[in-house]
Image (cartoon, rainbow, N blue to C red; front, side, top):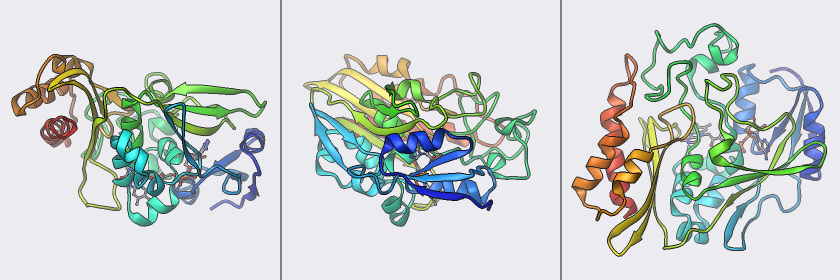
Length: 323
Ligand SMILES: Cc1cc2nc3c(=O)[nH]c(=O)nc-3n(C[C@H](O)[C@H](O)[C@H](O)COP(=O)(O)OP(=O)(O)OC[C@H]3O[C@@H](n4cnc5c(N)ncnc54)[C@H](O)[C@@H]3O)c2cc1C
């Protein structure tokens, strides 16, 4: 690992100023950043820790929304009673990530901003397209863990459990920049598709620090679910994941949202299937039909066709679980 200066910021605005200087990096729990440093994929000269920023580890309700600070851990969110009651899929997604040890250290915001797990990307000796090389090495390589949608330029899968679930509730992040200005970015606009910029996963500028993840309240009770399939029951990223939210009128669906996580380079809304659920009562047949619609445009690679069958079954289950 390259030597670096370690600085503890006393405020998020100060962290933004320090991180905007050449080759600075913000550190929250440090789980992914440390991995990237060890793998020589990130070589910051200065690491700015936000762990001493007062109040940054708070979850609070504000005007009906849940506001999650930048030091709130996955474990904290997973066991938060209000989150479990009103934003269930998000709390469940946080509680299903990684392992208990990781969840006690990893932050929710860091989870959103972690870099992809693709083994070609993570191997410091290989120059894949995401690292400025000419090709996506998974196209003709080992691609059993890779994307089954939007995978032609780069076949990483979006790594965060939390983001698809938070998107169900129209979540957004509030940020502060080095010049002190602030903005709010809907999660639907935070993540960058490979065809827009293959080298980055989110639109945050150098030094821009996330102050909070905001989850607005939704009317009509919480009918939401998060499901993931993985090879190991812990200490692993999902092979496939999704989050579903339904707004019900009696036993009929008024509105639906389905967002896939580990299936494409960015979280993926499934609008056609969502529309197909509206006006219907949910039973196994309706859930299976909507699930099949979700995979109509899948483009599996040479080794990951199994994800289509697995994802279809999991999607039907997630719809039934949500209702
Ligand atoms: C064995 C293992 C299994 C895992 N399994 C899963 C899984 O199943 N599902 C899943 O979703 N995740 C999984 N993870 C990933 C883990 O959840 C993330 O690495 C972790 O949440 C990152 O949070 P952190 O606080 O440690 O972030 P850090 O490592 O501190 O930061 C991550 C990135 O975000 C940036 N950053 C952090 N906070 C801010 C901020 N406030 N403003 C701006 N930039 C910021 C950092 O600069 C860095 O680039 C797993 C990790 C491990 C080690």
